[in-house]
Image 1 (cartoon, one colour):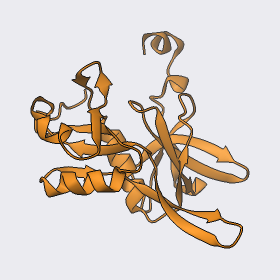
Image 2: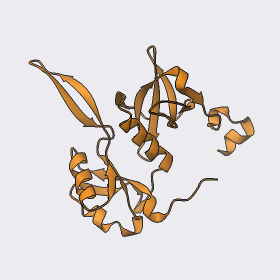
Image 3: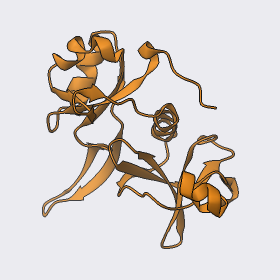
Image 4: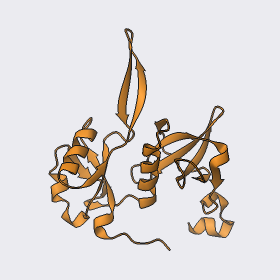
Length: 184
């Protein structure tokens, strides 16, 4: 049975103006909120030089922890367009997804945005800086990657992982008995 988070402890995805992720995150932190927008480093080749850029893993989104019934200070923050949800009802991001995104971002491992995956083997990392992180296992060329997703945004990111540190999660629909798959 999943625990229910107190209203003040829920994380929400904020849709923000293009290229305003860092500025909006800083404004929210200045107002006393816990907020983050993970970035990744990439090399862009130019005709005259190579340039290293820090780009958002989830372009156009900032994650923030707040009470949804008191969201006016959030909505009046520079750069914030809206709180992601159905209609005018904000929908919280799953805490396990936020924790996984934070662990991956803080691991120091190379990370990159990844297309959202709905199907695939669910895994958990059993050791190292990503210990406890859950996501989907994917093989790209000869490398294994852990894909961590935010279902609400239908966006994902991927990080390289060692096969020795991975264990399967058997509660994913792929591993449930046939009668339980239809119910999930």
